Length: 180
Ligand SMILES: [Zn+2]
Image (cartoon, rainbow, N blue to C red; front, top):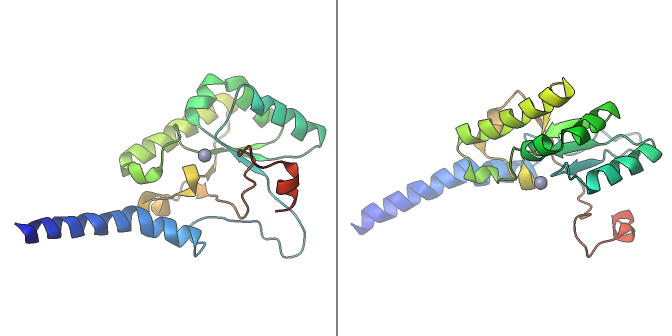
C-alpha cells in the first residue's frame, strides 16, 4: 500500500515538474521560449509594457501621460476587463499602442489544463479583435509563469520582461523606478 502511494506521489510530482515547473524555469532562468528584451546592442532603448488592465480609472490617466510624451507602449490586457471597458481598448489601439493577451482572467497557467488555457487565450484574442478589428500577436502569461502548452503554442509570441518596475507596489515611487 505504501509503495503504491509513493508511486502515485512520484508520478504526480513528475507531472507537475514537466507541466509547470520546468517550462517556467527554462523561461525565467535560461531565457527560453519567450522574448525578454529588445535586441539592444547599439541603441539605448526601452520597450514599456503594462499588464492587467484596462482599468477604468488608471488606464486613461496612463494613456493621457503616454500621449503627452508621444510614447507608444504595449498593454497585455485581460479579456474580462476589455469586455467591461471596450472604449479604453479602442483608444489604446487608435493611439498606436500594441495590445497583447494576458489571459481572460488573471489565473496562473499552472492551474489551467491545456484546453482551459486555450480558452483563456482565444476568448481574450476574440475580445481584442472584436473591438480593434486587429488580431493580437503577443502573449504574456500572468506572473510570467508559463506551462507546457505555451511552449508549443506557435500562434502567439510569448513576451516577458527584463526589468520589473514594481509600479504597482505602493512602497515604490518614481525615484525607485528611475534607479532600476
Ligand atoms: Zn498580470
